[in-house]
Image (cartoon, rainbow, N blue to C red; front, side):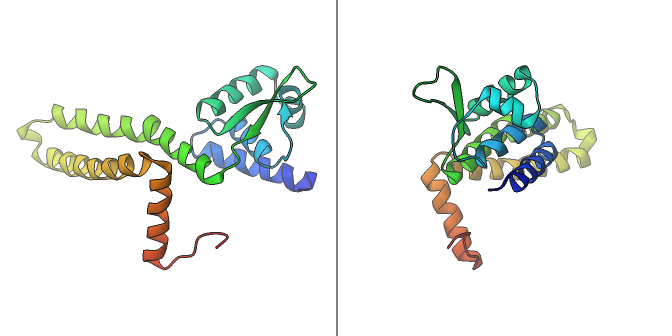
Length: 171
């Protein structure tokens, strides 16, 4: 990938990350690693993205906690280097796991708590919250099932693609 295309991808991914509620620097670093063949050092990441070491270090730590990048050793060099998760399906699966844990689960818990706090006097509110909680519970069961195993999740997506008559990318 030429430098111009790589830079455009990094900036676009960074902007999209912000829309998804992800730190812009974190998204830009992930994009840089996705668009680069060789492992990249912390210093090179900082220089390429024009960000501070502290910002880069914190973003790398967070990306590693999501398990979408890996720290690797380059023979003959004492620095830490980083690479993106090579399996795109694994990367998206791990992102889905984290998003469920960090966003969906607290939202469902908040609806459940609000439902418990309603009274008979709030019958319309209570009914709305009950329906919302029921829907979230169904979605939660689907997510738990799909995210219990990466291969199962992949199979479920393939089945949906077949059922809907869609074609998988690259197929």
